[in-house]
Length: 140
Image 1 (cartoon, rainbow, N blue to C red):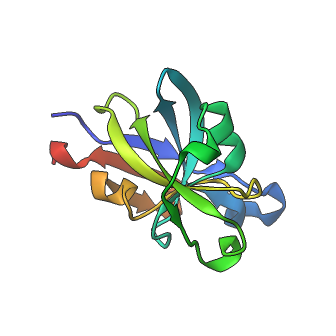
Image 2 (cartoon, rainbow, N blue to C red):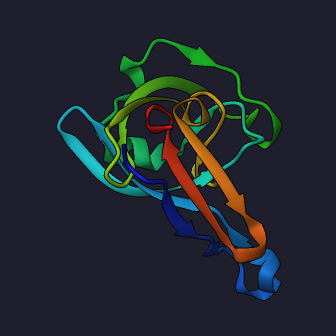
């Protein structure tokens, strides 16, 4: 059984002081033979994981080869999105398959949401300490 991994919040906008920190999680994303290091915003209010367009291209995903589309909501509703499954590795936990809405928007961070990041990992936020812990669900 692996212990939960603790991370610090990251400065998003220094001009906002303490309100400018966000819970970004470092992880490795893999698609086929291509991998990259990324920082995903932990967003408990997001229904789905969201992959920005440029990150998908860097992983070698081909837009026209993905046939399943989905409609995003909110400020991403104007952009088309396709479903892509990536392997994700967080810390020393076992790699997991995460389903992403790959959006044509680039003005959005990599978002880790309910489906299915929070179905694979438990997260405990310590906002007053500007930190959070991540635990693989099979380790609890």
